[in-house]
Amino acid sequence: MSDMSQNISQLKTELTSLIEAANDLQSLEQAKVTALGKKGRITDLMKNLGKMDPEERKTTGQALNVLKDEIADLINKQEAALKRQALDLRLATETIDITQSPRPERKGHIHPISQTIDELVTIFADMGFTVAEGPEIEDDWHNFTALNFPPGHPAREMQDTFFLPDDPTEDEEKQKKVLRTHTSPVQIRHMLNTKPPFKIICFGRTYRSDYDMTHTPMFHQMECLYVDKKVNMGHLKGCLMDFVRTYFEVDDMPVRFRPSFFPFTEPSAEVDIGCSREDGGLKLGKASKPENQQWMEILGSGMVHPNVLRNCGIDPDEYQGFAFGCGIERITMLKYGIPDLRTFFDSDVRWLEHYGFDPLDRPNRATGK
Ligand code: DAH
Image (tube, rainbow, N blue to C red; front, side, top):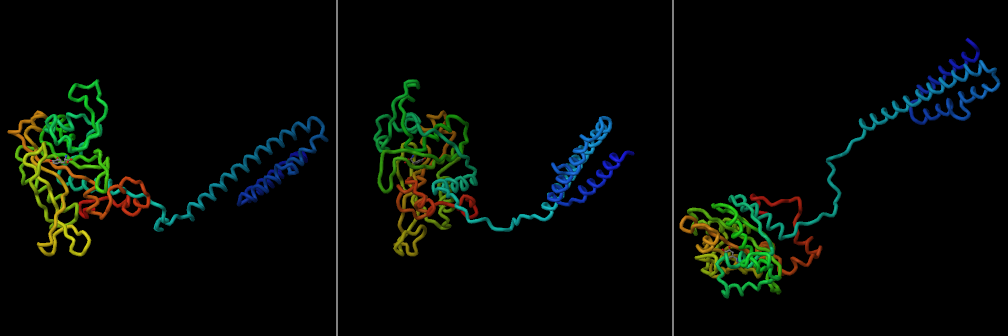
C-alpha cells in the first residue's frame, strides 16, 4: 500500500470515530468542519494532488472522493440518529398538564330568546312533539283565510299586518304576500303536507307594525298543534300545565283558562299563570294569601276549528285537536325578569353578558333550564 492510501485509510478510521463520538448536533457540526470544511482534513489532502504525477493523482483523487462521500454519508446518518434521539427524549420527558383549568377566556353568550327556544324544545320533545317550520314571508291565504279569518273580517285588522307587493306569478289566492303575523300558518302548512296525527311545535319570527315597551315590529312566537282521533280539551289543559310548570320551574303554578276568541279555535281560551306582588316585586306562582293572587296572561289556545281542519282536507268528525300560540319574548321576560322587550334587539353586548346564557350549559328537562 502506498503512503498515500495508508494515509487515506488512517484518516477514514480517525474521522469515523470522531463522527461516531459526536453525541450532540453541535459536536457533530464540529466534526463535519474538521472532515469536510475548507480547511478540513480531506480538503488538506486534496491540496496535495497538484504535486502528484498524473497516475498517482488519478488514483488518489478517486480514493479521496470516495472517502469524502463516505464521510458525508456517515455524518448524515449520525445527524439523523441524533435528531431521533433528541425527539425520543422530548417525547419521554415533555408532558401536558391536562388537569390545569382553562385560562379565563372571553366567552360568548346564548341570547335569551335562543335559550328559551332550546328549553321549550327540550320540554316538548319530552312530550313527543317534533319541530316544524314555515316561511316568514307568507301569503294571505295561509296567514288568514285558511285559519278561518273570513275576507274582510275585523280580526284581520287586529294584527297590524305588514303587507308586501303582490306576486302575480302565484295562484290568485296566494298572490297577496305578508310578513307572517303569527306562527299559526305553520299549522296549515304542516297539515297540508303530512298525514294526521299531527303533533308539532314551531318557533319563529313574526311581524306586526307596533312599537312600545311591550311590542316590537319583529318578535318571536311558539306554536303548538296536536291533532288526533280523540284529542280533547283535557289534553290541552294537561299539556299546558305540564309545560308552564316545567318551564317556569314552579311545581304548583296556578293556571287559569279564560274564555276568549280566535277565528281558528272553538272553543278558545286565554291562559293565565298566577303571580303576586306581596314583597313589592313580581313573583310567579301561588300567592301566600288567596286575596293576593294575581294573574298574568301568557298565551292563546283552543280546540282547532272544524273549518281549519276542513281547509286542510281533514275530516273534523274523525279528527280533533288543540292548538296554542305563545310569545317567546313574553315568557322569557317573565322567567328571567327582563323588564323591557326592546332591549332584546338592541344588540348591546353588555346586555347579552348580563342576561345571556353559558353556551356550554345546555337546557335539560331535569333542571328545566
Ligand atoms: N296566533 C295567535 C296570535 O298570534 C295565538 C294563538 C291563539 C295561536 C290560539 C293558537 C291558538 O294556535 O290556538 O295571537
